[in-house]
Amino acid sequence: MKQILLALKLNLRKLILISTIISVSCLFIVSVFILNYVIKEQLIQNSLSVNAKYASKVATSADQHFGDMLNELKYSADLLGQDFSNHQLTQEEVRRIKNQSNKFNSVLIVDKQTRIVSFEPKSLNLNTKILYKTVGITESLKHKTTYISSPYWSVKHNLVVLLSQPIYDQNKNYRGMMGGTIYLQKNNLIQKMLSTEYDFKKSYMYVIDQDNRIIFHPDHSRIGEKIINNNGLDYMVRTRMGSVRLINSRGVENLAGFAYIPSVNWIVVSQQPTEELLKQANAILLKVSIIIFIFYFFIFFIVWRMSRFISSPLNSLAKMASMLNQPDIQDKIKQVDPWYFEVLKFRTSLLLSSQAFSEKITELREHVNTDPLTGLYNRRGMQIFLKELVSLGRSFAVLAIDIDFFKNVNDSYGHDQGDTVLKTLAHFMKNNFRDEDICCRIGGEEFIVLMMTSDSKVAYNAAERLRKTIESSNINAIGPVTISVGMAFWPKNSDDVTEVFKMADNKLYQAKNSGRNCIRY
Image 1 (cartoon, one colour):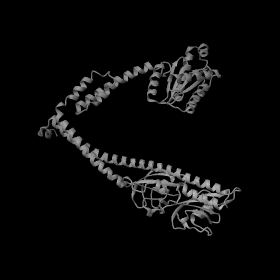
Image 2: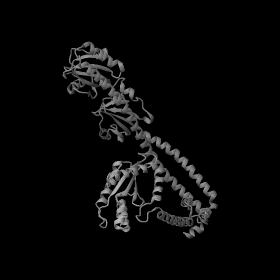
Image 3: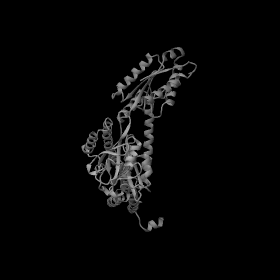
Image 4: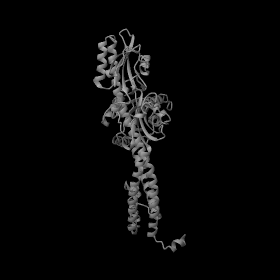
């Protein structure tokens, strides 16, 4: 290899240029592959999210409409139950329901023998003297409650969905039903709520009922069709809201978002063919690849022109060697690009030296911020954490802890035993609270815990667990030692941290005044 390099008369600048060409070429190829994956995956996830949100929005709106429709029918049904035999009243009600909102294509009142008592519009020309035993009427009278039918063919050969409410008289006797129909293959409420045109990149929306039949579809010929061989149908029925990649009954892969309409037990599906979306991804990828290629070519040109400055990183690192005490020196060292081995070794050595220097400083700061007796953070250390928590806006609980009758321990058993009690409590605190919780001794027998939670129940359970542990421990035959605890929460109780600490102290005093060995919050 050495002879080959000598024969090629390679110098450092040529090596840099050859390495750059190889690196840029490989990076370009890898970038294209990664971009291909990322762009397509991102577009797919965006499509799923957009479809899910759109379906949810439409489902919520539709649920409101259908709820209003059922309420309108129920109001009339309750009114008719007071005087079902009043023909004028029945006529007025069907006319009112039909005309006041135009939500129904037709409205009818049917008695329990399946005779149509009244109907609108009059153009239906229904015979009120004969029995009508269509699927919707029969099932509605059979259920005798709020009922929404699957699609069926009416006596006038319209594919309809029937919404009905039962009619009971004042003696709770069933008299019939008040119903409204939606003509699925004609202009109707569903068509007003949903787009009937294909949207961006052939995305579209359809609705299926509780029997997996299509209620609405941009292709009117599919209305009433039962969905089969759709590998996402079971998931949609089971989950009722979300998104899914599926292959529909015609073998086309789609990105679907779906949402449930509770009032009618239907599912709204908004979907887009995956192939159409990926066509967009390919176009984006081509444009991005051209931009990346131009960018990498520009980088190569700069390296070619600037290769004579190969010594610049060594010069930069040499200057940084005398500034290891600066707080941001490691970031500055990492910014130096190690173009060749010597620079890499030099930079690595400087980083290790800087890290060791930083660890030494950290160790010294740890001694300054830690209570030497208990190993817990002192007041200064606590203030550092408090400042950080407040700046991050992270909620926390303040637990003010005090050892009950600690002066008696010192007076009766001596300060050595008092120190043992303090260290034992500190040990139990470290074991009782989580690593993210901050345990501090702020003076004498006073302790503070900054607990990372805004849930009073979680904080109380942790404090109670510590209280019971201390109470049940026998420390050097001193006898039972107990603690009192006061709790407050930032920012739930107050936005002022100082005020929160005062609240915790007040709660601690309440615990003391309540007989000690208890928790107040």
